[in-house]
Length: 281
Image 1 (spheres, rainbow, N blue to C red):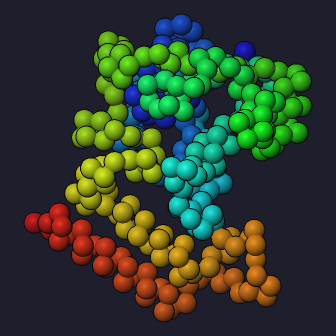
Image 2 (image 1 turned 90 degrees about the horizontal axis):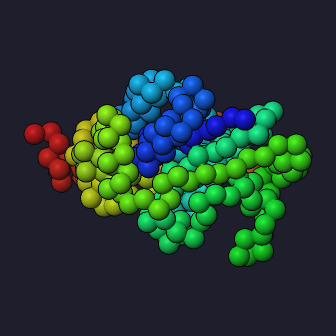
């Protein structure tokens, strides 16, 4: 049986990795990192450093999209009510990986009841593929690779354990420090969310922290350009594949006038942030 720990680089999943290490031993664990393509460099380093220090095997999973290409493909940004970034960039790659296994597995997740009302309603232990067999409140079941999932489940089992479900945030930090480790360095800079950076759930204060860093500010500029792109400044080939207009052109590159609009958008955003946060001083 394979023992998998979902490891995002955040404090909760790090505490779970430590708890799993104590119970099963590092040689019996596999840490699974779902790379959204929108992570901070410090997070990539932290994930690798922690696994190396603990002697835990690390597997990195990736979707065919990254965060930017997914937003363009969907022609919109994820939101608190439409978190398709999580389903497309994390859940589906993980499902694909589990289905590739030829044995049963335990999946350890760093989910805490204290994080939100929705998470408080979750279970400490459950079937990983529960949503394929039990309808949700709307009477729907999961349909991504449904046939493959049911065939896999006829031979194997995937169980979810959430060992820190009833923990407080302070207990999580204490667990990490007691193990002789440190949490992701982004926490020390004032960020509350470090998996996917910036996360759509982040606070305004965190956006300000990003904007004060010249290198990280580029992500804010990317977001500005994406707004323009999604608003209709361009029509990338894959952004209209679900409902293509008949005989509509699908350019490989942006026309000059649209390229200029993107350039202007970058310059305006750059000037705005430079002025507000005096980044050139």
